[in-house]
Length: 107
Ligand SMILES: [Zn+2]
Image (cartoon, rainbow, N blue to C red):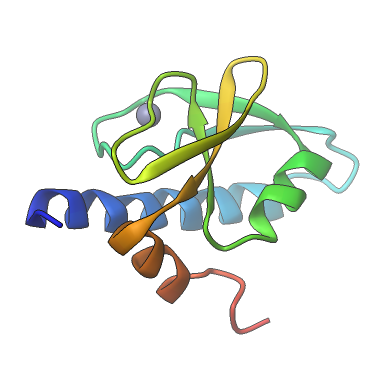
C-alpha cells in the first residue's frame, strides 16, 4: 500500500472517531444523525444523514465506514448503497488500520 493510501486509511479512522463524538452528543431521542463523510480525504466536507439505529449497526463492525455516495476509494468495498450514502467495508491494509483503531475496542 502506498503511503498516501495508508494516510487516507488513518484519516478515515479520525473521521470515524469524530462521528462517534457526534453520535454520543446527540440527545437520545434523535433518530437522524448528521455525520461526516468517512472517506479519508481530509478536505472532504460532505455530510451524511444516517438513522441512529443504522449508525449503530455499521459501527458495530470495526471494518465498516459510512461514506457519501461516490466517495469510495481503493481500500473500500461498497456493501450497501442507501439514500445519499454508502456502507463500505475496508479491505487489505486499510482494513488492518481500521481494526487497530476501532473506537469501540475498549468498551
Ligand atoms: Zn467524502
